[in-house]
Image 1: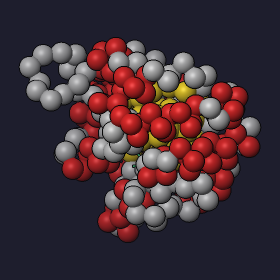
Image 2: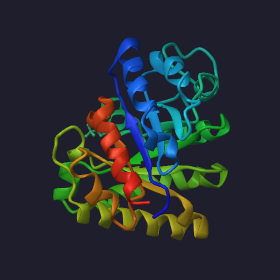
Image 3: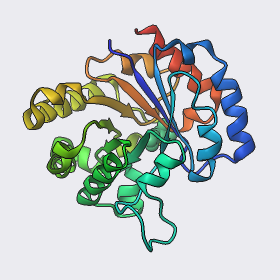
Length: 252
Ligand code: 13P
């Protein structure tokens, strides 16, 4: 297996003291600096500088959770890719289902954000996933295809990007996709990437997200097309996030 990428998405959680406690515990774990796993932590914007002060830990990178598609200007409350880069980020999540559903972000906007990220020298982690209604209506592949199609128009301009499959029904619900369900969609995404991007499509890392825990990480990460995890709730405590990192490291 290639080096797994394990990403923490803290969402709107943690103050500075809590972030410092996390990093103090996390960064002293020998597995983190061993190089077996690529670790990325995406904290809230207010914590980026604190997080970036730990980014000299080998194999730890910092990511933003969202960015505006514009480079600068009168967009109160927004943050640009260059600002994230300036704050020490190397990655940024785009199109997380909470952004798509709660803030009505369209696939076209998500694609613009991915382009803006690349323009700012950030690697976008593009999230896709179907709702429970989509899945029950056998529309999973159709939804994923539509979400990715918009991105393919921008793809020639992206030096590098990552795709995270996060079924909406599995996010924060404790209802994880079975390894077989996740693998089926990952194989479909891989096929789409190769169809649209040729050989480059094989080099795009595919992550699974949605109720990943230390208990289920191994069964997900051993699937052939699952190359890492995007972790919400279980990334908030260093101990449980480290357990997931350890599972990833054991597979190398
Ligand atoms: P949970 O791991 O809490 O289900 O969250 C997943 C997620 O949305 C990560 O981006």
